Length: 398
Ligand SMILES: CC(=O)SCCNC(=O)CCNC(=O)[C@H](O)C(C)(C)COP(=O)(O)OP(=O)(O)OC[C@H]1O[C@@H](n2cnc3c(N)ncnc32)[C@H](O)[C@@H]1OP(=O)(O)O
Image 1 (tube, protein in one colour):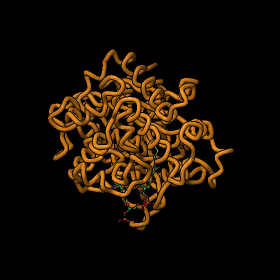
Image 2: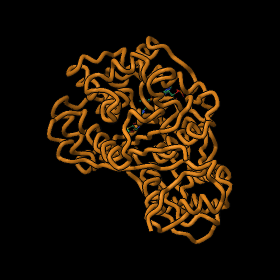
Image 3: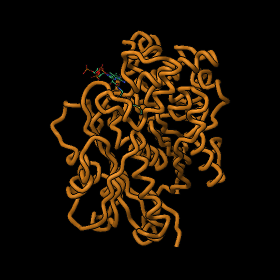
Image 4: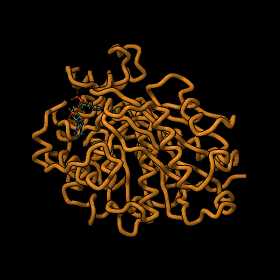
């Protein structure tokens, strides 16, 4: 029998610069999982299934992590979807509950990363066998291939195209970085907590023009967890006050539209994000105008602008002006990335999508302290991965 699904417990580690804390991925998972179970006020023995998201560990690392919470013999699923891995684990948890298979599911996500840039999905730099070969072929056909980090390069080229097509400025891109670094100053879980001016963001080292380092998500260690339960579980355990409803959630993958235009804006995922958002709005009967707070996938500053447009917060090409107007920070129409976003909170791939929902759960419960968005009732999370997958999740205070 289908039921509503609710988040009743969330937990996360502080996201850390790689190689600075002496921990293993299972230590991170134990900390985040214990936090979520404690927040929900339930024992691990109540958990019936465990989807676990990570990219850079061996198979069954999910069991190694979950076993830190208990050896109860329940099903564990190891999932990955590049940078959308966390929300993919959460999507499985929600479907297990909504579809009536389970009343209580723990979604876990973690990553233990190295310093420096990622390889962009090409094992050893050989894109011929990479799952994202077609995406990078679109980039190379239009922009060639430079000796800069591949992920920063494909998003940086999307930024160049947005500037060329719409007149978006480097200062508008930098304004995303300045906003998110400023937001993270109030987040004890954030990898960085320093604020920067737009000029300081522009003056940082150029990674792939127009993206400077302070507009790029860093590599990070960290974990996040969420307890997802059914309506009857909420009632049986008296969790009504703690519960945040998952009103709607959708995942979209690439279609021919991603590749047809020859544009980096499309191969980095804007059409997938637009499609997932459309499915969520149609399913919920709500729109972006009903949303108060957003945690979106600002892996690079340009992707925050592309996602404003994909979510319908503005018309295509108007996103630079939207961030510049102050509409996406405190006192504006929405607060986008109050946590600091990926750029400043950090981006451990397997944890990111669940950490977004942790932040929104705290916001919708009124527990975000110095980051609290006033009267937040509806939140939207957006998690995207190259290759690709985009997951949009709409949450509402129960
Ligand atoms: C769909 C997607 O999500 S795609 C995105 C997937 N993620 C990525 O591709 C990772 C993107 N990040 C990177 O490639 C790298 O971190 C870069 C290029 C930004 C910087 O790389 P490098 O300069 O080679 O090294 P490193 O990562 O150690 O960063 C250098 C310094 O800058 C700091 N730094 C990096 N990013 C940031 C940031 N956003 N804010 C503040 N400081 C930062 C690091 O902490 C480090 O500081 P330290 O030298 O004091 O220890």
